[in-house]
Image 1 (cartoon, rainbow, N blue to C red):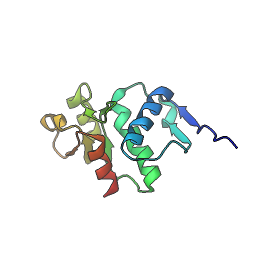
Image 2: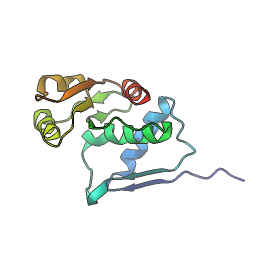
Image 3: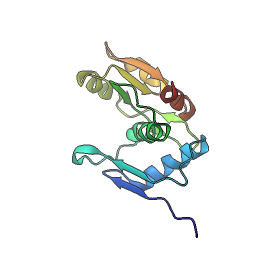
Image 4: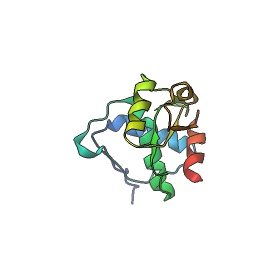
Length: 137
């Protein structure tokens, strides 16, 4: 029998963006070519924001590795095609909101350091490989 094409089901997210993130993960050794992916932005939210890339990538990786993501941790950053993590626009505002909502740690690009509010710790990652290292710990 011919191999089937895995499903890429996305609710509230851009399917093409999820496919790109899956391809980046494949380049970093995550075997997704034969797996279905289901990505759902809960609560009826529509994610059109590239800053959500790292969070989506972390969720997919967490599921594949069967390792839960650290509690009270936000993942913030755009993921480039070769695996670089780029800063989000308006970082100070985003980080203040994360702190206000009870997050204690942010995994994101090192450039976030200059905008960190009191009570929020940065786990700097500049690449997908570094982000995967945070998940694998």
